[in-house]
Length: 165
Image 1 (cartoon, rainbow, N blue to C red):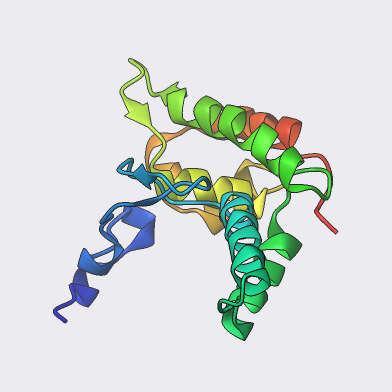
Image 2 (image 1 turned 180 degrees about the horizontal axis):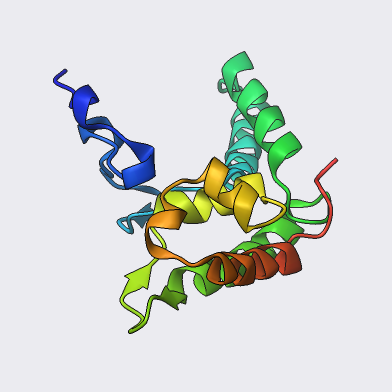
């Protein structure tokens, strides 16, 4: 498979061909053609829905989830930081948080928007302040002022209570 490894640079939001979106699926099994980079909480919600299907299949004599699936589910559960320890809590908060971040505009004329990678990174990493956000997500410094980043962090932190346990 050809890769554009020499051209990849997350700080410039250049990820190469392997990162191109090819379509996917929603938590309820519907095809999703939106170009989204999912955060851990969103992946956790989807895996929880799949776990229910695997349990039904196993109860009906079919194959259940494998070890890799269980490991992925546990990993995303540990790192899904949508306050509360339930899928319902994450499912309830994610659309509003994602919508707020996707609709935010920046720059003197509002010409900049966050890339999907930046949205997922902000939600997953929850930087303490704009300085940490720029270190963890360097592409933010290319288009946003520190005070704009601080406002984004207030939105993220306002939607994320405590870590999932």
